Length: 376
Image (tube, rainbow, N blue to C red; front, side, top):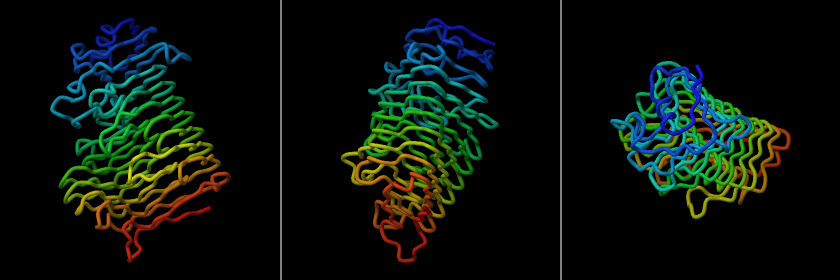
């Protein structure tokens, strides 16, 4: 079923009706200003099952969804479920597609993201975001499983031919303007994200892309999650940091982030001229920052986590200080983050030209269970 939309009222009417599940909503050229008093979700756009939202083929900037006027309250889902903050556009029910649009976030409020995938669905959630321009947010595209409600949930994502730029909104420390984020977070276990990236241009953000399994909740466990990403001919250029890979990062007291995996494989992708976050004493300048297990709170355990990164025919150059900075384990406290964390790096072809600074453990671990292994 195709639904043609020409104004903001028609857009809310189309996306809010459960009867429109499975519809292809096509927007006419124009600016669609999201407003907190319209629609059923405080001004947010929330997809029905198997719904598609698209603009004009080959001309993404002719159709603009503008979230810049939504207040803080628009980014708080009812009952704070599945998380305390969310995005202006929410996906995740069945097979949802967003194509040929420009989406502008809010630089003045406290949204988590411009586009989020946190709508809970009983089966596998499939996401396609293609030919879009995503800008002006704290996180541009946020592929995430969040909280125990997402235990064992699987997201399959295709992110293709997008321009993701100018996501510069920053909290102090943790949520620094990120172009693409994929995360299993806040006490979820057994969650899976599988993603393919192709032909995206990610530039002018603080962090170009971050993949991480993360727990910031006391007493909860973020264990046995995985994120697998395959990248083809993407460009991560002129961000402050190009890519962050964090297999298990923990800031929750009496909590664990154990047995998690990140797999990142890139073919012909460029990570170039990323200039370093400044000032940031923790994230030292580099093109790619990789951590097996990390902790920022004493008593927050991150153990048995693993990153496997394979770069084949990738251009990695011109990055501030060093191209790749890798830690088996990293703690901001005098206490070890955990044990048996591993980072493995495979370089083939021109990828071998990348400069690398490896550090098995910070602080040092005499037992040597945390490791960085480089194959080239």
